[in-house]
Length: 217
Image (cartoon, rainbow, N blue to C red; front, side, top):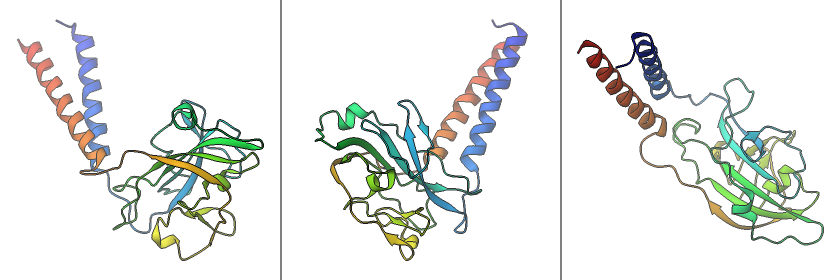
């Protein structure tokens, strides 16, 4: 049987987890006027970092673009998958003056990031072979993605998403060739946060019940 102090500490941790799960699961959804944007990311092999969008990724880089809610205009969450270079580009050759870069395009969470009524396309992970001087924007530009940008070079839409942003800006010219895409898992069914929050809350509640029952025994 656990001493009283460790047992109380464990109960507090479990109750805290329940509270956090409830907040995450039932947080209000963003409205149609909540700012959203595309942001650029680059992986260090373990996590996503946020460099300048005009960066020139080197051969062997893993970069990502993510669409999402940006309430304060400071940026969105990073892409949800961190692909490994060897898994995506390991078998792809590059000629003289070219580079291989893994490109992840994450269209965001359909329940959280999408405009009301929109369904985001399936996120993709692609091995891009491009000139060594290609910037992050040029690496994004392909027949499949056809990004639109504003006068400042900010990405407005990728693959026609979100549709409301396709009426402004200009489409970038196709500047590179990409190997066949390896699509990421598609979202579907109930909201992921809601399911995860509910499971965590139930599990935590069961844990508290048995701890209190043992204490009273």
